[in-house]
Length: 393
Image (tube, rainbow, N blue to C red; front, side, top):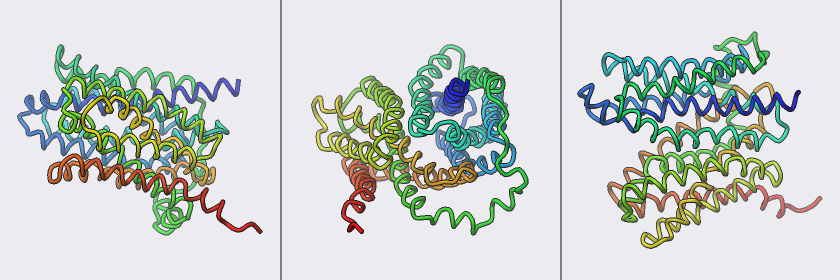
C-alpha cells in the first residue's frame, strides 16, 4: 500500500503541475483575439504576461513557508484551486484591467505548487531524481498540447471559452488530489511568516557552498530554457529559413523530447550522480545549439532540435541536487527560495537573447547560449575533476 500510495501521489502531483501550466499557456495563442476584444496593444498584454511569470517566480518561496505552516497537501490544493478560479475569472473579465490583474493572480496561485510538490515527493521517494523527472515532465506535456487546443477552441468558440481549458483540467485534478492524498502534517506549524522572512537565515542558506554552486548552475539552465521557449520557432524561421509550419512541428518535437527525457535524466542522476547527469544534459546542449548556430542550412536542424530537448531536461538532476543538500525540515521553504532566485535571474534569457537578435542577429544571440552551456558543462564536471585531482590522504 505504501508503494502504491507514493506512485499515486507522483501521478497526481504531475497532473497538478500540468493543470497549472495549461492555464498559463492557454493565453499566448489567443493574444490577437484578446487585444482586439479589449482594444489594447500587444505590449499591454505582454506586460500582463510578464507580471504573471514574475508572480509565478516570486510565489515559490512563500509557498514553502505556507507548506511548513499548514502542510503540503493544503498548499497544493490551494494552487490547483486558485488556477481553476482564475481561469474562470479570465473568461468572464469585463475589462482589460480585470483581465490583467487576474492573469497576475493566476501566476501567483500556480506558483504555489511546484516547490511544495517537490518537497512532498522527496519524502516519499528515496531515488528522488526519477520522481522529480516525472513531475517536471508535466510542463512539457502541457506545452505540447495546450497551444493547439487553445487555438482550436478559440477559433470555434472565442478566446473566453478557451480560457476555461485551465479550469477544465484543474477541477478534476483538485477533486482527485483531495480524495486520494492524505493530510500532510506541517513541518513547522508554530513559526510565523515574519520569522521565516528574516534576512540572515535566508542569506545563510543561499551562501552555503553547495547551494550557491547549484544555484549558479540552475540560473544558466533557466536562462537558456527561457530563451529557447521564447525564440526557438522565430530562430528556425529567420535563421534557418524554415516555414512557420515546419518550425511549429520542430517546436513540438522539442517539447516531446524535453518531456520524455526528464524522467530518464532524473533516473540517471540517481545512478551516476547529479553532476554526471547534468553534465550530459549541458554537453548535449553544446552540440545541439552549436549545430543550430553553425549549420543554418540543410537537414542538420532535424537532428539538432532533439538534442536541444535533451539539454533542456537539466532540471531533473539539478533540482535533485538542491534536494540532496537541503535538510528535510527546510526543503519546502529552502527549495522555494532557490527557485525564486534562479527563476527570476533566468527570466532575463528572453530579454537578453531577444535584444541580441534585434541588434546583432541570431548567430550571436544563440551563440551566447552555446557559450553559456559550455560554461555550465564545465561547472557540472568541476566537482568530479576536483575529487580526482585531490591528493589522497
